Amino acid sequence: MTSLLQQAVFRQSAEKLTQLPADSICEVAFAGRSNAGKSSALNALTGRRRLAHVSKTPGRTRLINFFEVQESSYLVDLPGYGYAQVPGDMKRHWARLLTGYLNQRRQINGLVVVMDARHPMTPLDQQLLNWFAATGKPVHVLLTKADKLSRSKAAAQLQKVRAALRKEFHGCTAQLFSSSNKLGVEDARRIICQWITGPG
Ligand code: GDP
Image (tube, rainbow, N blue to C red; front, side, top):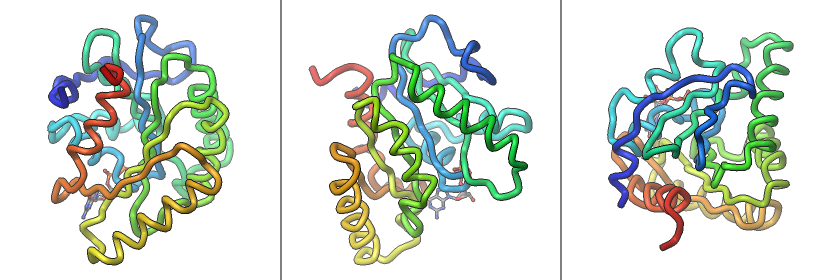
């Protein structure tokens, strides 16, 4: 079942909410600070080394990029946030695009939030969780680059994030993840595939 994600193919980008794919019946969205490891995570989850490369090409980093995994079901790569060099009005454009997409898109079945395990739950991550919480849909946090921490430090970070989520963002789950050594890839695939195909 998890091989579903390996079928991902790039379909299209959207710069505005009016450009989202019309045929879509199910979407799993990926968000995170730029450089948190979102593209690497998408590549690891789909088993495709250069899939999310498309989201990194000049001109595409500020777009919403759609990868189809089965007919009318998409993995959605949202623009990374928190990049310091970006001018204010562009940040506002991103924020509008991101909040608009997350709040209006009914076919979103779940949101994956990618955070660097060494610096999780930044104010922007929390803002994103706040925006999405209103939808009542599930969120799963990937604490990436876990290979850069000792096992005990990684476990401590996971406990800390889970405690913070329990307190403020009820129903959000979290796990350790590494695109480098593939830690947690199967667990994450299982959750995402369930969001796409349903529990049965
Ligand atoms: P994005 O901006 O969130 O898409 O981040 P990228 O996937 O491009 O990753 C940013 C940097 O972190 C790159 O240099 C990656 O090679 C590195 N990176 C991403 N994931 C991991 C990981 O799991 N382990 C390690 N050690 N490095 C990672």
